[in-house]
Length: 278
Length: 215
Image (cartoon, rainbow over all chains, first blue to last red; front, top):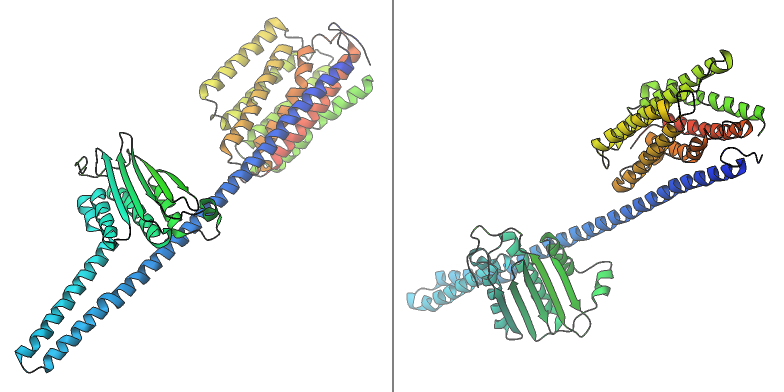
């Protein structure tokens, strides 16, 4: 050992270099293996989270459908159903009345009941799928929605539209409308607010929809951590996701709710594009 | 290192090529399009090894020129194997360039720089760098794609790992090989170390031929 040569390189030194290179190569392979396993683990976790979210969404959709069916059945049974039963009773009573004079008030009452039935049915139909949304677009539908809340005389509602309004694809307008509907329902039911403000801002690149109330707000993080997350929140998030929109929630206990939805304008535009609605 | 020990290690290393040969022959029917060229690589190594033994120890004829031929064959087979799998992220032009560059290096090494009857130090060193580059590209591709969760079932993983270890550690020996040839004792020691690394490489090739790709 320790021989020298033309290079003056001893065998132990050469061996040391070989071992160093060997160690380096093994280190590269080991690093690669560890890093690859870690990436796979992360990917698996992401897939599990996505699957869990998907499951929650499915459950939310299913319970929403169930709730909608229950509501519809109850409206039909308790509202229109009972009105029509009352109408039928009046008509039966008319059968047993011998003079036309005596039947007149009964006929008039039956007519009133039928009018009320029609009005209830229209309201129900409008709640299910607002005709104004399809016919006149998002702004008109939001106007209708806010008008209905104003009629309750419990909240001050404001709707502001700025920029050059355009019509978007039906499903896009419907999604924004449903988000607004969900938010208003939540405010009316839980927020104990006195004012509601909706704003649609048509910018060159984006459409911004903002919503705020002065209610009691809630702990957003705690809500997100809940095992059974509220359907409303999931519904809003999934609709925003479908729209490819950015969603910003700003709320905390006692601070009201502020929501901003930034929708890219390159999303599908309605066939009657550019009909000014502003 | 004792000359006899070094010779014994070299002979054992040469015989270790029998392992991948047996595994390749027994499993020939199920070898994939990646494993078959690996098997040809083993056959090529054994063929040159036998020719070198025949020319050297038996016929007492210089046999160093065989290393030039072996290096070209070995690189072509490795180049072909890696090309089958690494066309993304690499491109056809990269493979063409490496092939042309290597062939030029091999010709220059044989005819001018090292000489036909000397060890092809330059060509072999250049080959090492190119093969290490292919191995690293293979690892990079795996991290980019994350398509093979069970790498132990991928023959190219074992080939890349074996070559990565063998060529990285041998590179310094290839570079200095022509400078130490006059120092017989050191030369034997160096080639004994090389023979050990070569044996490990054959073990990796054996696993590459043994595994059944399931990914």
